Length: 95
Image (cartoon, rainbow, N blue to C red):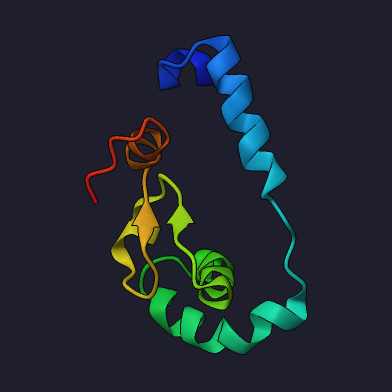
């Protein structure tokens, strides 16, 4: 499905996923808890279940990559969609 939707060849997709997963890490509760209140306030009227993603992005000074419309509505952290990420990987990032 990823190959079909992304337009990447199998080899390109494997390379991309290898690069992506080399950078994946896990955050402890201690690192996200300091931002939990701000994240919950930001997400309370949108989708409270997504507050943890916002808290993690705040801790890391990072964007959230998701197709979730609710995460796109919040303004606490940048929100990236699949099309934006594909453009960045291909080197045609216009943002």
